[in-house]
Length: 375
Image (cartoon, rainbow, N blue to C red; front, top):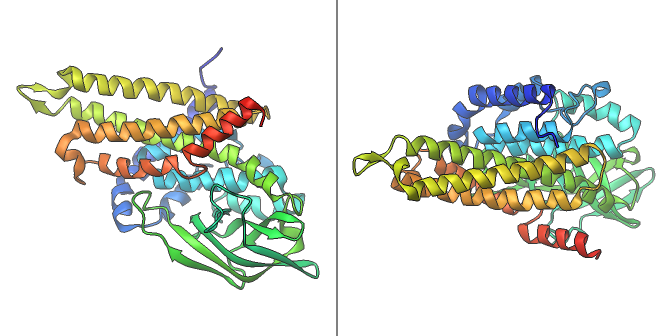
């Protein structure tokens, strides 16, 4: 087995790291405090091709594939998990399904705008009574001549207040169907804006669809086959959140190593003490293991090979690692880690959501078990 990245992918990783350190990290704490969307940072990321990583070159993308996108997501999330999830949703949950399920006309209409960052994408599946139970949708889609009319509300929508195009799942008479909804459409509005524990620079909102008219040619995939679109897309989304988890965990490890080499107690830096060494060693070992699993899932997806179990496993283990690493990073920093003087308190807050969105840890275990048991 060859664990080395290709020369191209290594360049992608280095470019993303340099960009994250120079352009993203300096503003991350302030944006988190102000709950401010990273508009400038997203635009600059798009200029590097990071908004079109899942889009082919014919439609203006950089065609980095799932593994390339995961590398970018990890490096950017290491500096700012909010921008990391913004790009993950945009690439994995909007551009990705458009490339797979979109018609030629849909691709021509939307992918160039999304790939260049002119437009931002969002994904709307969850509702008040349809979170883990994705089939229990109440948002309705009714036929009106050649058009569709959407009525209902969606919750927990990442970038919903900033997006230009949202993939919306609604219940049509034929079954759950995916629609491409432009947020400038009459009847589309943003409802409640959530106040969150972490990921504060990424808005999470309710969107309200008040008889929003959607042309018939904006059905993504087939009418009544929306869950096929959703579940196929979520495999990629889980890899994206696994990559985000790796980035947060790496930031926790970096901060812990740095602090352990500077903080002195009893006449020595705390890095000399076995209790601290073991925490750092465990963090590093688990991070390496989760990274291999995430890269394997991405590699399989790029080759169109079965990867549902691998994606769920990567998301499960990487998100758990992320939370343990954040907890240990705060512990290593002691009282200082509980203040905003050091970034580990932000990492701690940002880490928690990784075990919840794109399918909770409990759902990942169900997915893995069903794949193994054939149920």
